[in-house]
Image (cartoon, rainbow, N blue to C red):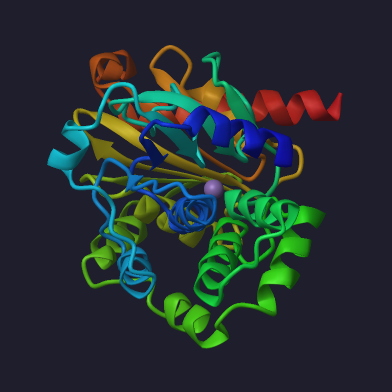
Length: 329
Ligand SMILES: [Mn+2]
């Protein structure tokens, strides 16, 4: 990865550089961007952090506060030179979760399965539980010491993206975690961890409790209003905690379409594949073995008919049966 990073430095020479996370960044995206920003600074490069979408989760706001992360404002982003270098972090081009910004997306640092057809000059990609693990390795390979605050952010990113080292975790995540553990501020981690819910989030949880529909091992929740991606994901984890639910499908209204978060606890059902197949023709979806996301496009909503909830239940149940059945044969 050192070679790729050096290539990044060459591309960056004499140009403005920006770090862009996916829209509505989660702790892993933000921690990775923040740590990358510092790493670039040690190499003499100033790279502001950018993203689209608001940050409304309380733990993310707390991260911005304690780590003094100040992303570019909307009007500052409008003025970026088109010749600038953009580094995509925790996301790839063409993902529904990445709004195109000014500048050239030439570098990608990501841990999600590689799906984009788009070209990057530099790709730093590994299938690990968190993007923060990749950035931690970059520090190691470059021989740069990790300051306490950076270590704390990275550790929190790994912890959150792997659901406390339980989901999609690899040996590399564990190595990074144990290294960071010695450098990080444990009390700050606890504080971030204990402040993940705010009063307005309870509306989404309320909707989950009221609207949950369980068919076999699948639990569905329709949240009848828009909410941030992170909150939809939290509700998805929440219903997965029910003993009857092995697969969680949670969707909220987004524009006139729907935004999905899908979780699978079953080793024979890949969450990314499930959502990808279930939303065929009406939208898109993808992600990891255990966690995935998706969208139903506003202009395709009518394809779901007069009763979208039933159509969604049917689509997911059918794909589930097909995937589970294929396994048995
Ligand atoms: Mn991530």
